[in-house]
Image (cartoon, rainbow, N blue to C red; front, side, top):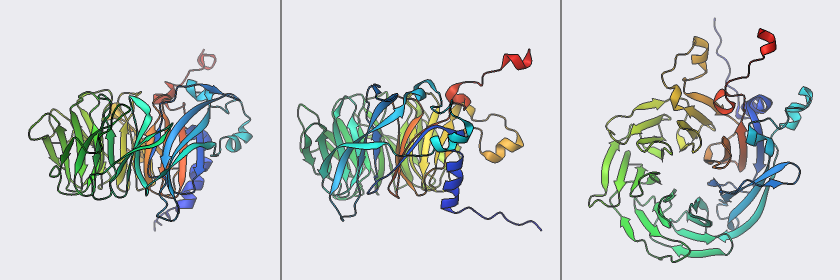
Length: 401
């Protein structure tokens, strides 16, 4: 009689992941925060060498203290071995017996500045044209504008309830969209020159339920997408009288969406049914494809700015998954098929609770920051031994000559 294999506990899965870190990653850092951060984003810090053979990168994180302590918007920095810029393992020269210790997750995050914030931070995003300015959203739907050098600049009130949807327009300086659980969407004009305390446009009937996410298009400055608990994915044009130019009824509500940085027509969205869906903006009636790998709701999704066709998703299953869209439909051996669909690059299984947010570093390809519900912030880069990361394996000509 066949016996079913006992499922591993969360701690057992984490221990198994940790034992495989030297094989799967070039770098891993793990920091236990005092409070959970619902939001994390890399700042576009120029790559500069720090002492001891490191390079320094900076992040934005927030706090969610549940009212037990003051909340803060925080700026942090991390030193990363400079070898990862060239897809090298910082410990490649180390003895094999020492690698597990040297590559074990350890913290080297340092908070460099923090500003008091009214209630928890549900999202924090910097302005692409001027990263000194950071917008935040809280549990009451209030939008705040901070200057990194001067603290709180403006308090923007329109929404009446919690929100997670916040997006700066990368093509138009100062244009900021916010969405809320009260079903509303607002367009703000913010920045160093002037910040109106009232939105320049609002939409009360764009969705009939919670607005889960909102994103500007990366090629067309007038387009943005929204997803909602009303199970609709909408493409919207701020120039149109009837703002929605396309709408898709989703299988289940989507939590997140993202536009490609390489193709003006490609969109990804995901949510409660755990699949990642791909759409072509020229024909939204049916998805181009959907990818299976998560075991619970997908919480966030993002396209790589560096590598065309690479998508990363996070979920309530404690996982982040990297996908390569160029491998869709590729042939697999039966053994490979047991590990997942052909487009799956790798699964990051280092978190022990739902992943709240993650961000791909714009300066360093494949470097990711991810935060989870249980107060953990991880910074990691998958191994350069993956062909899509480091290129095809080098052949030892001495062996075949």
